[in-house]
Image (tube, rainbow, N blue to C red):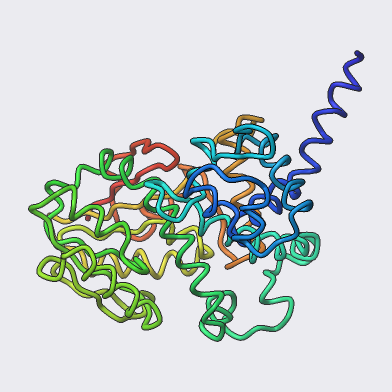
Length: 338
């Protein structure tokens, strides 16, 4: 086989990536994964439980076997693989809501990527939506719910690495800036019993955050603060935590937010920034994941993924000092002080 054919063969798999997303999304959306999460099923049983067409359901299941999500358990019987089980709602590291986010929101948005590359404008800007992506979600509770649930899935997946790298046992009082429903803060409080903290975000996140705090039994150690972090941050916290916040915004907005962090920070305090640094320009899986994430920022909120040097420059320009840089699994941590 010539080199050209090898490369074309690989390229075909890349071009068909949207089909994989659609198959996984469909398996979650229709309830196929939850049906199999309860145990082995025949095609007929899955179809009856999901109210789907049995022959077409079998075709979907055959594709899921090929993708490693299911495996054959006998004639016309299927079971989930360990990887497929991660799409179930009750899995320890569930990505069910991330699959719905990719299928319902991102895959549709990305079809307009050429328009954003051509114009430098986000999807929301191109349709004249007031307030950008977050303004759209404020007006669409269903989309906001899908987004929030997906972010919680991803945060739970990476929390262990972030907590280990960030050494939060000595974090004191933590302010989770832009913390949404508080998934990361709650995981930190569970792992570090001497800490306490508050989630700071917009009003639309408050109900979900308070439910999560109550469900975790953290009412005595966690609270929710409603605020616009561009307008200022409350003082008195030992640690300001920003996970996946700066990449949502352009440099000008980041400068305002980091200046607010400096103003709110106590003398011995620190800012913990969790982002994915853009690695060297190569064809590694990490480079591909982060570079595609950067295109997602272009299409979505209008921010960008940045190199380590770019994040350091943002931090120092705001009058903060870069104290430490740590790898943290899929993420990187930048610790800044006054």
